[in-house]
Length: 161
Image (tube, rainbow, N blue to C red; front, top):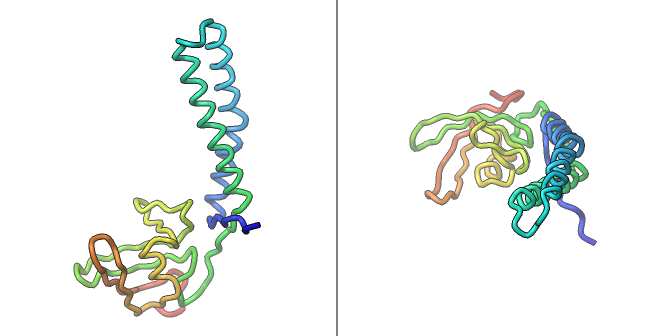
């Protein structure tokens, strides 16, 4: 049997997932059950949009519960470590060599990735290219817009700034 897919997350994100799971199992499930009960009490279910909406919401909630339970069960907490190489949980300041624009990104698992917050997945093209590099290294990243060259300027906690 294949080994389950690991879910790489920070401790903070794992706690958020656990909190969401608790809310869904306790509060949200009860709310949906109450909506279903009220919709059933209205009678004829074949043309009852309240019942259909409540069943759809129930389906969504149960699906999300299963997803969260799986992610939590397979979670591997990534730790920030002092290193001069980019690894999971590293915060990296990079510069686009063509535009000279700098940005700071943190390498996280795909579940936690949020480009708007500067959190990029280790599975993304940029994340993959940065892993294992050190300050001063240059990387080329194939993107849909073409090849982009980045220079690694700084790694958080790096001894080689």
